[in-house]
Amino acid sequence: MCLGIPGKVVEIREGGPLRMALVDYGGARKEACLEYLPDVGLGDYVIVHVGFAISQVDEEEALRTIELLRMLDPEGVELELGTDPDAAAAPGPA
Amino acid sequence: MKYIDEYRDSALARKLIDEIHRVTTRPWALMEVCGGQTHTLVKQGIDEALPKGVRMIHGPGCPVCVTPLEQIDKALAIAARPDVIFTSYGDMLRVPGSTTDLLSLKARGADVRIVYSPLDAVRIAVANPDRQVVFFAIGFETTAPANAMAVAQAAKLGLDNFTVLVSHVLVPPAMTAILESPTCQVQAFLAAGHVCAVMGWTEYEPIAERYHVPIVVTGFEPLDLLEGILMAIRQLEEGRAVVENQYARAVKREGNRTAQETVFRVFEVGERTWRGIGTIPASGYHLRPEFAKFDAEARFDVGDIHTQEHPACIAGQILQGTRTPLDCTAYGVLCSPQKPLGAPMVSAEGVCSAYHAAGRGLAAQTAFPLYDLQKPLGEVVR
Ligand code: SF4
Image (cartoon, rainbow over all chains, first blue to last red):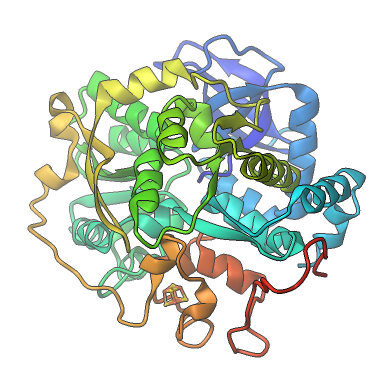
């Protein structure tokens, strides 16, 4: 739960009680809360911990990290993203 | 350790390793605080690529591993109640309590659910107004903003069927406790990058100064770790002891202020017991009195649970970095990821499971000396 994986904000969902986003982690997509990064917008890269975006990173760094993590520690990425299909949003095109 | 070559062949990794060997003139002992970093170090064999005599001591930064047995037993007692839906991060499910674990309870019919985010637990509470939903709020500073927001949301929604079982711990007091220990061998720290992404690193500055210990805020990838190690050894060799930031791409000195505000609105700092280490003052979070109605320990009278670890388990010494899993007589024999005796074998971030996954000390099943101080420096162990 501490790994923290960078992903890209592909959709922002306002209107609910919290500002939420759909974040793409190189294919897998999950919902994340954006309350702690009020300035983040569509297309930005963020590091997400247990469903909350905690810090913003630049695109090049993020892409490199995602690729590296998937290569070096695929199980760690799985574990971090969780395997519960109910919690995940419908996967979009990779 | 099949990935070692992939990253070692990268020109940059090679350069960093060479530079570490070049600047090192003496044996040093460094502690990586975070369990995720331990996992990467061991899995990629980074600790074995360091100069002989440079030793990585694995710190207590695995939240699952330091959650005290009492707290797990409380979780089990609450989860066993028929009116309760018990929710938790997946990592906690197999952690052995005194007599059972959450997964076995679930198999016996308890309603135990894995959630990815604590907000999922709040949603479950909204959807099940006739059931009590309890979330096991564990972790270091990295999960605190998420867990705090879940409580704040429950308060905003006026939920009276949502509570949290809090077992939150903090990194800086643990570092201080390690430094205060008379058997402390740690000469420099790699601080956990994502903990600092939330909290910043101002809390580490007085520690570096007071104990004259270099602290390098470090990321999680092999190259981050190598660079963090290099920066720490440079400081040691030059006799400096300051806080430096290797992980500048994600961490600012002040951290994430917005997240800190919510954390301190919901939680206050207080004493916490660490599995294997004991009680450390001001080392964790408790709910503030305003949020007391969301405290699972108050809602469900779980009584005073006192417990004892498995006698063979030396997790406490391992978590403090004075021994390695190879010193444990149960390691790989009585204790394995399939049948864990202690928490460090359960969690992927635990030292024992990291060693086991990398096959360390399993072939011969004899403890071998990991670090040979006699060998000349500058030699890469393959
Ligand atoms: S190997 Fe198992 S019994 Fe030994 S210290 Fe690690 S968790 Fe405890």
